[in-house]
Length: 369
Image 1 (cartoon, rainbow, N blue to C red):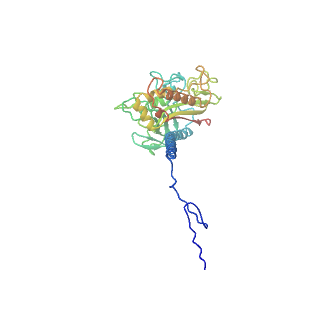
Image 2: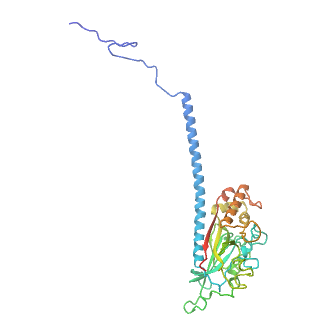
Image 3: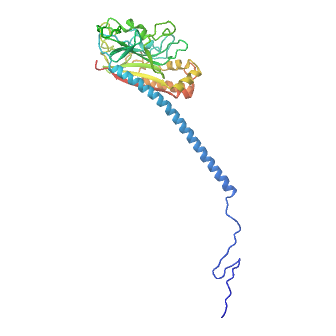
């Protein structure tokens, strides 16, 4: 029997199908590859951080807008109810703005007829009217009624420490119809008044909005006001007449050139008015705190920069001719103040606070009168 030798493997070759290789070491990243990886990772982290910061800023701004949107919706919805139930009669009084002759706090004592508020002027508009909405009265007892004297104002009482300063207030003073049987409601001591009695003559505290309102024993401020818009610091309204023109006078001056009020020379009420548009400026609580911290006069001056409505039929060139023109002018004023970092009179305006301000408006139909 012959024997065959076993295959022998060598380090340098092969024999009978066997192969062996020597390896000099393991594969690994080079220093250059590590540096590139670290650089790319740093860029990704930086981009993610910027994305998170942008998302946080957008979320914060959105939260501010949600706050102001909610407030504006609440206020304007309440106004919609009050105007819808307005007592539209020619034998009752309306406390609304009009001509300088028709001195019922036209323009809330004005911002100078389309300009910023001047010395001795009050600022935002006021309005008061009778409405068939439930009302309450704080004196002599708290009682509910089916009728009320509704009023809106920006509280501009300058008494130190006034918690309602530059906030929107509403009053729903409970009333009863004249001749109501007091045996049914013994507290019904405040009947609705008909002309020639006026709101300003019968309830002057109800429409008082000067610096003498409230404080200590001063009784010139009606206690039935309540704050409904703590972020609303500016209020302005204007009329759309049935002739299609926008105006700050609640009657057609072309058709009634001799009319000086809603009652003289004839009682017309709001028969010439198609609708009322209300504009408000709102700021969230955090933004207001920043403005107040910068300077207590900043918000007052900022509100003054939001000019009054200027009627289209008269008082010079440049009046608002379309619904929304007033609100657009407010937006422009806000953008100018934000860009400058201060109000027109130089009061500081923190950018983050100014970004929290938004302008809203709503039109209320009165054509059923």
